[in-house]
Length: 429
Image 1 (spheres, rainbow, N blue to C red):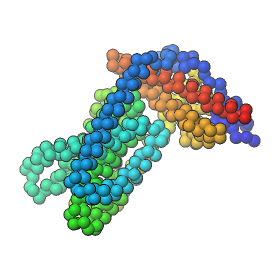
Image 2 (spheres, rainbow, N blue to C red):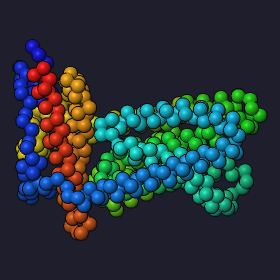
Image 3 (cartoon, rainbow, N blue to C red):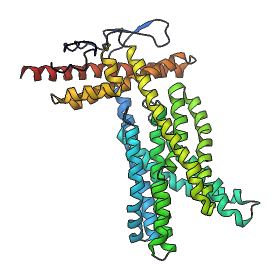
Image 4 (tube, rainbow, N blue to C red):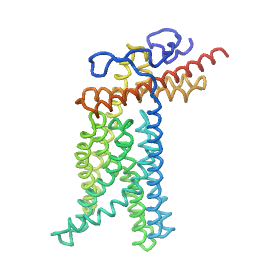
């Protein structure tokens, strides 16, 4: 028996013909998100929507260039202060924890990948702008914190209070910037975690170069001190900064999914507290001497395990939301009942990709999955906006969401046409 297509119900005993694609994105009527009735779906976005999208792309390109220049300038400054040879050695070592963090964040982001340019902006902010603003802001904050403190406590105050306060605010500013730039696609805790994690990974990369270089200089070129700090920062705690700022990112992402700008700003302030607390707690362990490793095992390892469990739960929540929202399109004919589990479960996606690759349509199926997932989150945003207080801004957000939904539905129809056309051509060969 031949293998059934992903569109076939698992209960069916033999392969069936895929559903006929919808002819027009304006055909069905969708239930209004607030449940009060039905509204007719608009046609594809007009020219003003495309112009707005083009303007946003230009803004993102300019911002990316500026942040990249700041990052390069920051690294060049450290290269001149440490020496080129030391900088290259320490930079190579700093790449190891960076690659671990980036690979992990990309894996976490697989369900609904964020745009690559936005991810690069996040990294450049962390590796450049956040470092520069931390140095500037820290020079203002330090005298205020040291007022009334003895010089003997300077190192502890700087590590436990100043660093968490200043660094998390500077990293968090980049997250807030990304929310305002990408608010149409910044729509969940995983998005916030990934953006915040990349900002933190970039910050840790530059900071590691500095710490590694200082250790090498203080040891007069001997490798002993460098090896020790590399083990602690690069191998034992590569995710330290990522975990700190991820707490902020999760709070902002949750607010972005379930509320408007005010809720996001409030969540940003609230999210700074756990980020600073974890940061200060980690820095405090460096003053424990021989008890550092005991505290690492007793406290930091369990926190890391809890962090992993939290990510797993967030991933499952995203899959559940995708299935719920795509299911709302079944009655109006945009998706078949078989397509929803195909698009909203890991097993369904794997089967769909395996099937599509059998006739060289893997990239087309990936695009179909990506658009459907994006559609589910846009639908969630519409539901939230429909329940929000009415006003000009709420109405504008709702209209923009409808426009985005119409665009995604139109693209899904076209991609489905292409996918089924390739499948039909493969059958006739």
